[in-house]
Figure 1 (cartoon, rainbow over the protein chains, first blue to last red):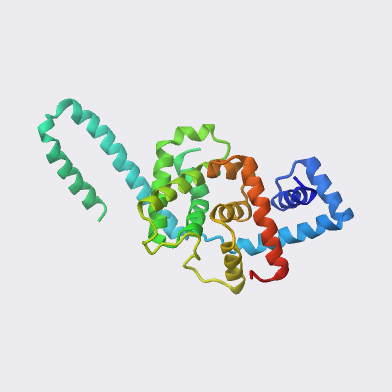
Figure 2 (tube, rainbow over the protein chains, first blue to last red):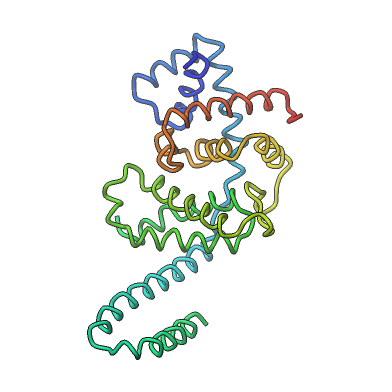
Length: 112
Length: 154
């Protein structure tokens, strides 16, 4: 790794506050003593600010709706797993096609 | 950490990543659902992972790759496209600059600057060695520095 690359990581770590205490101390010293580091830090700050605009927040309403859908899917998976285990033990195999039609109908109606 | 907490904490990060990578909001929602369903089924693995965020993003990334395999290019779907929301000129300039990078480099840059992921988390997410992530990140950032200084992508 070159010194410039080391400076790039140090500067980004400083902005993200992920540096160990000794690294942070070094970065703060470099701000005062090394113009190259300062220039890299300025570029990192500019990049961070520019790229922040790429973040698309998930609207709260959609977040809740999605959660309910996911919970619904989880319920379906659990229902199938439990029911199939029980039915495998007690239901004759020839009735399975009927069961699948019934399941499809139930799930389709649940999603309406 | 239970499932609801996991969702509340990281749904925004997963959503943001998928919107960054894919244009179609419906596809994003579908992959979100698949991602969290898979996370629910594998919730016991959560205790073994270093970063829940990187773990979830890796599931989302793999689900997205699977989706793109099942629905190749002819669909009106673009990688790394602009989100449907409004864009400022600055935002468009960043998008344009990012288009000059390859797909992995864009993902790394997004992970570093938007989600604040570490190299290790990105390596976990993308399933590649940390050293490779680091060198790709350095290369991409040097190019972005250049465009920032020049103020142009040409």
